[in-house]
Amino acid sequence: MGRIVRRCVLVVAAAALATGPFACEHVPAGPPPVFDQRPLAEARAAAAAEGKLLVVKATADWCGPCKHMDATTWRDEHLVAWLKDRAIVVPLDVDEHGALARDLGLSSIPTMLVFRGDEELDRLVGAASSDELIEWLEPFSGR
Image 1 (cartoon, rainbow, N blue to C red):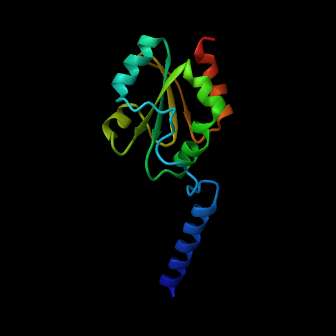
Image 2: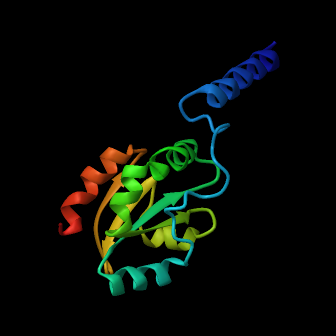
Image 3: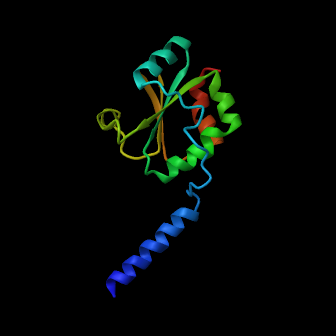
Protein backbone atom coordinates (compact mmCIF):
# COMPACT_ATOMS: atom_id res chain seq x y z
CA MET A 1 0.00 0.00 0.00
CA GLY A 2 2.80 2.46 0.82
CA ARG A 3 4.41 1.95 -2.60
CA ILE A 4 1.14 2.78 -4.38
CA VAL A 5 0.69 5.97 -2.36
CA ARG A 6 4.28 7.04 -3.14
CA ARG A 7 3.72 6.42 -6.84
CA CYS A 8 0.50 8.43 -6.78
CA VAL A 9 2.26 11.30 -5.01
CA LEU A 10 5.07 11.22 -7.60
CA VAL A 11 2.59 11.20 -10.50
CA VAL A 12 0.65 14.13 -9.02
CA ALA A 13 3.86 16.08 -8.35
CA ALA A 14 5.13 15.44 -11.88
CA ALA A 15 1.80 16.55 -13.33
CA ALA A 16 1.84 19.72 -11.24
CA LEU A 17 5.34 20.59 -12.42
CA ALA A 18 4.45 19.88 -16.04
CA THR A 19 1.38 22.13 -15.98
CA GLY A 20 2.23 24.68 -13.30
CA PRO A 21 3.86 28.10 -13.60
CA PHE A 22 7.27 26.54 -14.29
CA ALA A 23 6.10 24.22 -17.07
CA CYS A 24 8.56 24.22 -19.92
CA GLU A 25 6.63 22.77 -22.85
CA HIS A 26 6.51 26.17 -24.58
CA VAL A 27 10.18 27.06 -24.10
CA PRO A 28 11.67 28.30 -27.37
CA ALA A 29 14.60 26.24 -28.62
CA GLY A 30 18.07 27.26 -27.53
CA PRO A 31 19.23 29.77 -24.96
CA PRO A 32 17.73 33.25 -24.93
CA PRO A 33 19.51 35.41 -27.53
CA VAL A 34 20.42 37.95 -24.84
CA PHE A 35 22.82 35.40 -23.30
CA ASP A 36 26.44 35.87 -24.32
CA GLN A 37 28.02 32.47 -24.93
CA ARG A 38 31.62 33.48 -24.18
CA PRO A 39 33.32 32.05 -21.10
CA LEU A 40 32.87 34.20 -18.01
CA ALA A 41 36.42 35.61 -18.09
CA GLU A 42 36.05 36.72 -21.73
CA ALA A 43 32.62 38.22 -21.12
CA ARG A 44 33.95 40.07 -18.04
CA ALA A 45 36.82 41.53 -20.08
CA ALA A 46 34.43 42.55 -22.88
CA ALA A 47 32.04 44.22 -20.42
CA ALA A 48 34.91 46.17 -18.86
CA ALA A 49 36.28 47.21 -22.27
CA GLU A 50 32.82 48.37 -23.39
CA GLY A 51 31.97 50.12 -20.10
CA LYS A 52 29.06 47.76 -19.49
CA LEU A 53 27.79 45.83 -16.51
CA LEU A 54 28.33 42.09 -16.40
CA VAL A 55 25.25 40.14 -15.31
CA VAL A 56 25.79 36.50 -14.40
CA LYS A 57 22.72 34.27 -14.23
CA ALA A 58 23.40 31.17 -12.12
CA THR A 59 21.33 28.31 -13.51
CA ALA A 60 21.08 24.55 -14.02
CA ASP A 61 19.30 22.27 -16.48
CA TRP A 62 17.05 20.89 -13.73
CA CYS A 63 15.95 24.31 -12.37
CA GLY A 64 12.29 24.97 -13.19
CA PRO A 65 12.30 28.67 -12.23
CA CYS A 66 15.48 29.13 -14.32
CA LYS A 67 13.79 27.59 -17.36
CA HIS A 68 10.72 29.73 -16.77
CA MET A 69 12.88 32.87 -16.77
CA ASP A 70 14.64 31.66 -19.94
CA ALA A 71 11.26 31.31 -21.65
CA THR A 72 9.84 34.62 -20.44
CA THR A 73 12.01 37.15 -18.61
CA TRP A 74 15.21 36.83 -20.66
CA ARG A 75 13.23 37.04 -23.93
CA ASP A 76 11.17 40.09 -22.98
CA GLU A 77 11.74 42.78 -25.64
CA HIS A 78 11.83 45.59 -23.07
CA LEU A 79 14.53 43.88 -20.98
CA VAL A 80 16.55 42.84 -24.05
CA ALA A 81 16.50 46.44 -25.35
CA TRP A 82 17.45 47.79 -21.90
CA LEU A 83 20.37 45.38 -21.59
CA LYS A 84 21.67 45.89 -25.14
CA ASP A 85 23.61 49.08 -24.38
CA ARG A 86 24.16 48.54 -20.68
CA ALA A 87 25.21 44.97 -19.93
CA ILE A 88 26.55 41.65 -21.07
CA VAL A 89 24.59 38.70 -19.67
CA VAL A 90 26.25 35.33 -19.16
CA PRO A 91 24.56 32.14 -17.99
CA LEU A 92 26.58 30.08 -15.51
CA ASP A 93 25.56 26.45 -15.16
CA VAL A 94 26.35 25.60 -11.54
CA ASP A 95 26.64 21.89 -12.33
CA GLU A 96 29.16 22.41 -15.13
CA HIS A 97 31.11 25.07 -13.25
CA GLY A 98 30.84 23.89 -9.64
CA ALA A 99 34.16 25.34 -8.47
CA LEU A 100 33.33 28.75 -9.90
CA ALA A 101 29.84 28.60 -8.39
CA ARG A 102 31.42 27.90 -4.99
CA ASP A 103 33.94 30.73 -5.48
CA LEU A 104 31.03 33.07 -6.18
CA GLY A 105 29.25 31.87 -3.04
CA LEU A 106 26.20 30.62 -4.91
CA SER A 107 23.85 28.68 -2.67
CA SER A 108 20.56 28.81 -4.60
CA ILE A 109 19.35 29.29 -8.14
CA PRO A 110 18.33 31.23 -10.02
CA THR A 111 20.65 33.92 -8.74
CA MET A 112 21.66 36.95 -10.78
CA LEU A 113 24.89 38.74 -9.93
CA VAL A 114 25.89 42.13 -11.28
CA PHE A 115 29.52 43.17 -11.66
CA ARG A 116 31.38 46.26 -12.76
CA GLY A 117 34.84 45.02 -13.64
CA ASP A 118 35.89 42.56 -10.96
CA GLU A 119 33.64 44.07 -8.29
CA GLU A 120 30.37 42.36 -7.45
CA LEU A 121 27.84 45.15 -6.92
CA ASP A 122 24.84 43.09 -5.85
CA ARG A 123 22.92 39.84 -6.32
CA LEU A 124 19.28 38.97 -6.74
CA VAL A 125 18.16 35.53 -5.58
CA GLY A 126 15.08 33.87 -7.04
CA ALA A 127 13.05 34.13 -10.21
CA ALA A 128 12.31 37.67 -11.36
CA SER A 129 10.27 39.36 -14.06
CA SER A 130 11.84 41.62 -16.65
CA ASP A 131 10.51 44.70 -14.84
CA GLU A 132 12.00 43.48 -11.55
CA LEU A 133 15.38 42.91 -13.21
CA ILE A 134 15.41 46.38 -14.75
CA GLU A 135 14.41 47.95 -11.43
CA TRP A 136 17.21 46.01 -9.71
CA LEU A 137 19.86 46.86 -12.33
CA GLU A 138 18.92 50.50 -12.95
CA PRO A 139 20.90 51.99 -10.03
CA PHE A 140 24.08 50.30 -11.34
CA SER A 141 23.64 51.34 -14.97
CA GLY A 142 25.00 54.85 -14.52
CA ARG A 143 22.22 56.33 -16.65
